[in-house]
Length: 253
Image 1 (cartoon, rainbow, N blue to C red):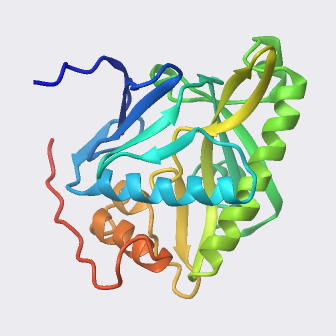
Image 2: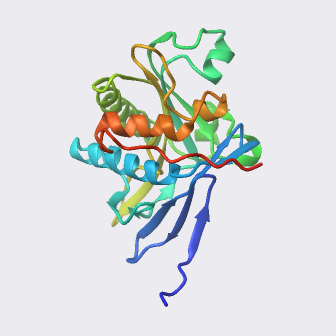
């Protein structure tokens, strides 16, 4: 029997295990879906498989355009090998259109184009509900310095350019997305790279013509079957064959 793997961390949608080589981790994608800071929960069969494939697709795309990230290779249907990083304790949010919290905060109609892409930060803390924080807080509390923030904004906007183009090419509007950033060291030299995942769990995606939602808002707002939405995204991007059929969801309390 293979030795039991050492679990490093378990989040709402993924588990990180010790990797086969030093400096690596195995990232396992669960079928769990959560919303409203985990107040709403479900197990959606096949979601983890889809997000693993989609995140592989996007991370490989970032590599191809020179945007550094933690992805090494996909191992199987639910797992990928990634580079171990020190996570900056921020969620970096890029918004192209008003939706969700910014629409509520500013009284904007959802879908309103923003004057330019807006980058926001939230402090990664589930107990506090990942509160929005300004740069002043980030620097004062030492979560990142000004140079880090300049580099993070540059990375986030490059990711936005890449993702917006890829999605628009298959008839999808990238409304907003969030990414996480990791620090890696090459000797004494530290650099920042994209970590975590890029999937419909971490993006808002609307059909260009109909504004149909193809992201986790389907689950948040009870708009239909989440796996159908994610399968549609994967089909359009060519990650799944055109005749792929989604698995059915299993709900839990």
